[in-house]
Image (cartoon, rainbow, N blue to C red):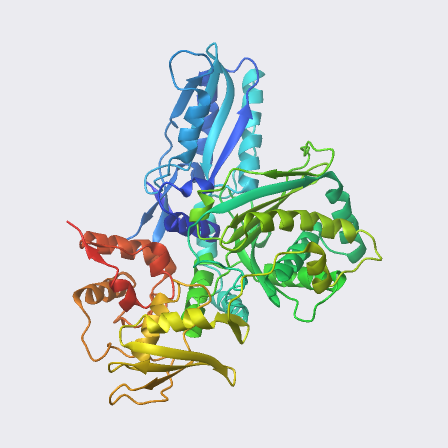
Length: 621
């Protein structure tokens, strides 16, 4: 009988990310591990070792299916032999090892039927030389990968020594972890989510607002890295002097660089955080990390020492509240975007990994451009900063969308990271953010008319364009008045403020830094009131007095059905209507079953009103 349970909280992050990335670009979430093989190992020995680990760890034979209520569930399948590809290094007319490994790496996993592991044995003269495994991140993090390697090597050592392998008992499986998380105290979980709701309300909508050249979305991207032998000791010296972890030094440096580049007074980012120490089942082989939001304040132009203290404090606070379901954080961000009338983007990720005791292989600082990360660019992130600590150095790697960081800025960012840390190894150096920005010499952003509404940068011209794109609007004037964004809109036909708000919410993702005005003053609109103020919590049910069309009726019906809601208003977003992030894929599947397509998971999970999404639906078949 198959075992089943809800998804673990770490699995939810990777499952949702896998759903939101287009097919053909999902291999950015695949891990490729090379395992050298000792002499005397046969293919049969390898199959026996791998199949033993598959029996031992349920994560290696788990698929993910939707239950009748639309929730994704992990289902453990019975043990069975894992298919193993055999490839030869010899020129025998068969595909070369590199081609086969690339094929296994790039191919999507169908998580509803594929186990999260693929295996390939490279042979020479019929003798196995190397095992290559391709793993899906939903079942593996660094801890799990190290466990797999350690146990696989122990199995091989036992085989070559002609003795029985002795492995420690498996205390818990992923389904045990999922049940423990599902049974967590509801009040404690609600308190954690209340903390994150307050944090998200204070975040700037887009830290790259002053720099973003096009609307957020898939585009071209750059990737580069810098490896520095001296950075390891410099970072550790600074951390020891200030009583913090070396990772905090890198994060403070990242915040200073980002503030210097963007001019923003607050720098939020997603810190990829392990939940193993927070769990009662920390030894489970599965993925147990997800992004945790960290936001650092720099409005008072602090010196590096103070910025480091703040960063360490903010990271510590974030980690205290980090063990929550990722999907519910995503829902809070979508709800805040809808309430605010501006997309809240936390799309910069930072990750710290230890590769010791391996060597960085560099004797002096080495900068390198990497292959453009085409698959990563489809995932919706703005940037990814990886800090890899070796035995004898540090590598800092950066993926960035060209819309926010062009090539010149990527290189300056990485070289600046090394310069700032090396400079602050000297206790007498304590640069302020403004001083660091001048020294690093980032090119100024392209001129755009940006205004401030609370913590958010808003582009006046882009907001005017969004308003004018409504067919009933002739022109609009946008300004900040007593802390609110106010638009005076001239119309050629009757139009309600709620209708115009729905329209702007549906188009605000098409241009950078668009915000739906807090107050809409409509003039020359027949008998529609002027100086009308939109009630952000109660938008109108219909547009211009018309009834919903068939596509809108179907979409609201399906959202209500899948999410077990009594009724859904088309002027609400999916999340505002009560839709759950984990049920987005099932909602889209239900639409396809009824012959309608045209909405991506990203679009449905956004703050776009369902009415505007319905306009994207088309019939098929």
